[in-house]
Image (tube, rainbow, N blue to C red):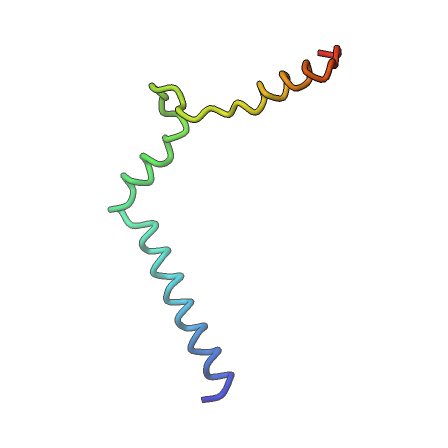
Length: 71
């Protein structure tokens, strides 16, 4: 088997994989899941975030520690 045949086989496998993925993504069985995922950014957050980033508050504290009066 030479390089051209090997590349042709790989290209055929990738085309089949692409067609399969496209059919899976646009199937009617997946529509409900994708509609739910589409609306996730608009979902209400009931709980406060557990791991809050406190680096901003530390930064302002360190500015006061250095004596910087430009706040």
